[in-house]
Amino acid sequence: MSEITLNAPKLFDLTGNVALVTGAGSGIGQRIALGLAQCGADVALLDRRTDNGLAKTAEFIAGTGRRSIQIAADVTSGAALSEAVARTEAELGPLTLAVNAAGIANANPAEEMEEDQFQTMMDINLKGVFLSCQAEARAMLKNGRGSIVNIASMSGVIVNRGLSQCHYNASKAGVIHMTKSMAMEWVGRGIRVNTISPGYTATPMNTRPEMVHQTRLFEEQTPMQRMATVDEMVGPAVFLLSNAASFVTGVDLLVDGGFCCW
Ligand code: NAP
Image (cartoon, rainbow, N blue to C red; front, side, top):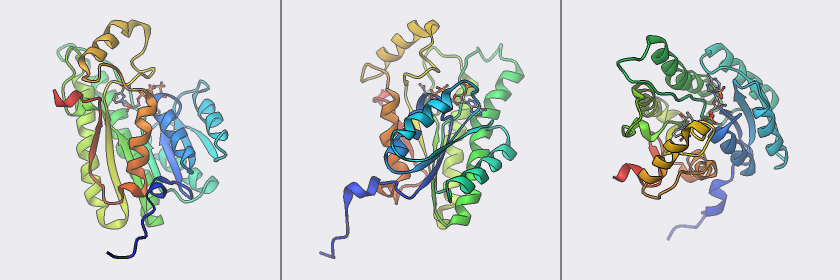
């Protein structure tokens, strides 16, 4: 047996990394940002929200002893994302990790959907992820290494029973295949790119009061008979970003309580 250099718990250590997280002012992005800080990364927090979402995330991170910066920006603007990456590198150091979680969800029957509603979904959920990856990878290619996780959805793989959201489902299927494509473009240049596809997760996106009936259905339809918590998205993100996943690229990791098995 060759000499053992393996230190398994260390594989998940993100110390020395700088991460950018989009959608960090709420839900899944907020909790992943905190998780990355707990694993040792300094984190730039980006969101379009003007409430105290980002400040709340920054407050959580301060408790870990890691550094964070708050960036109010919209992921539909390539210029804003380039600026965000430049500010991250100036204030925190070379960018090596990114999680792109900013996204929206809504529903409307296909035959009634206005062109604008379809377009806005694509602009944020698909083009926004493209522009984020582009800005992040430009820095990572320069830095010689990087790992990106895009938050897609199981809706990119299955059609959610009872939900008329063809534009959302198409945007997420696009994120999954676009991620595989970018993974192959950058595979020889030190950058890994993967997706996480959450199943139904308890976040502000789908725990609004008017969703009570719907969330009961979500729980019933999920083999584990419940929705995911935001905390349950952190481990998969840390894994994919870390050296524990050093041979993993172009993968879509379903985190869905078994939903896609049935
Ligand atoms: P969330 O709590 O609403 O968080 C999403 C965050 O992204 C919000 O702060 C939102 O701001 C922000 N955002 C939206 N558009 C943006 C833009 N153009 N530029 C910058 N920030 C923007 O929702 P979540 O459930 O955590 O969703 C995070 C990701 O997980 C999304 O991509 C979603 O599609 C995906 N996902 C969620 C579930 C689920 O069940 N929750 C399941 C599968 C996949 P606003 O509040 O202003 O929109």
